[in-house]
Structure formats: C-alpha cells, structure tokens
Length: 151
Image 1 (cartoon, one colour):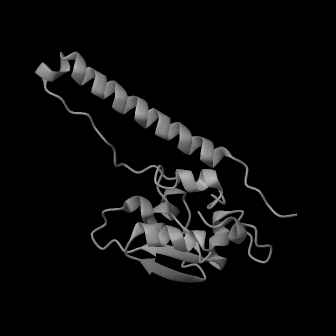
Image 2 (tube, helix red, strand yellow; image 1 turned 180 degrees about the vertical axis):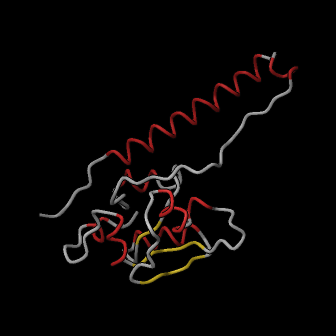
C-alpha cells in the first residue's frame, strides 16, 4: 500500500508488482521473524515473483511509523488487515494491486468440554466469529474498491 499520489505518478506507475523495482520499499525491522505478513521476501514468494530490492529501502522499528511513511508518500509498504482497513476506506492509503498474502498464522478458540456446554461461553464464541467475519468482509471491500487514477 502507498499514498494515492504515489500510486498515481505517471513517471513511475504502480500497476503490477514488477513496478515495485522503481519504488522505495518500506520495511519493518523484524529480527525474530514475528511478523511474516510484513516481510517483502515472503510477499514476493507468495505471489510467485522473484524478490526485488526496489529503488531504495527505508526501515522502521514500529508499524505506525512505517504506515505514516506510506501515507506521506515515502514509499510502498506492506500492511495488515484490519490494521490498515480504515486508512484504505478513508483514501489515505491505496492498494495499488490486488495481490494479497494470507499467512499460516491464525486464531483459535479453545474451550473445555465443560465450558462448551455453557450458553455464555457459546455467546462469546459466536461474538468472536461474527467480529472476525465482519473484519474480513471490510478488508475484502477495501481491496475490491477500484483505485482512482489521475487522467
């Protein structure tokens, strides 16, 4: 994702992942590999493309700084839904192409046999599942919106 102005640059279009070679890639420092969904190497591998170094790189140790740099037009970043969904909805960021990467990470609901019989426990499970479904629907809608380009 990047700023709408960066995505609309005529001199350096962002229409295909290969176009990233002409842009600064914004990286999150992750020495312990805790955030594979924010790793450019893994993203390129997930879409079946050789990794590019880009025209440059900027590294950040906090996600909010990385996203602010993307908003400010300093480069292209990887983001994580739902953390960036609102920024996409507000038009502060755009997803220049539709390549998304689902990680192997997941959330699980674990409950004992005894708690599975309790209606209040089931109500919490139902609420969590509904919230996850709503979040996923919002992410799909944000990514499905057509990108506005300057003429």
